[in-house]
Image (tube, rainbow, N blue to C red; front, side, top):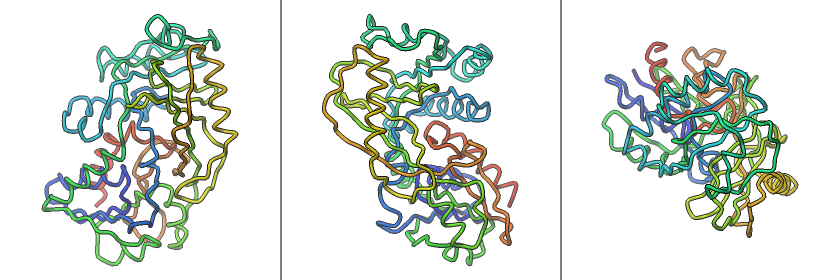
Length: 345
């Protein structure tokens, strides 16, 4: 089987890497030329949180399997610069949580539990305390953490380039003309935020694919100890950085943005810091280190998955995030997609 994977972000690199390890498969990974797409893609901008819990069962299954593989592999932990920070996922209520946490426990024994925000962010344990809604419920994961998706991508690309059944080429990816004329058994567009425009430029349907701006700020945070967290009610999320900073952000409503770096919407950054200040009384944000933004691709079914593209090309697929934040599910999703391609081809 000969497969072309177009797109050199985290998902495309991992998929090509999985395929290169399958007997009888030759894979060619096509990445954009320097500056096209811009260096600041979703992989470079990602905060890299890895956790098992997610509301969607399929996403939870992929995230649990991905985190289990990461923790079991010293190589993947080193490549991804994994740090165990823990994760606190705040929900409105605890409906169905016992069964969902039990699913995670089967894959990651001793990692997940249900607790309160006051306990999850307790000042007695060095946390910032909690003055937000006391009725919220927290799924706390001990073994969750943070990674560098860009570092993992770079390490996978280096390993891929050394494999006999694989090649990495830099080509302009303005349309599918560069990748459909060479007799591949399957072509996969793992092009993230470039996916909708690439499909349209090639005369193919892009229904169900939309881009969205992702923005966050990294602050000096002093000695405050916070786990990585996400509050599904307000959308506020935060990640401790390796050097004592704190990344804070909220989801944007900026849809259909062009791929590449996104200009800062300062009101969103300010809103995230106000929300954090209202919930965590002991949090002292210092100076701004970085305001970052990029575009990512979203799909109708918000799961990182292989999707067939309807049209005249029978073996054309996309492999894109579905909801942004693919770092937590990319390992398992890439393995699943590689197995599916074997069956399709």
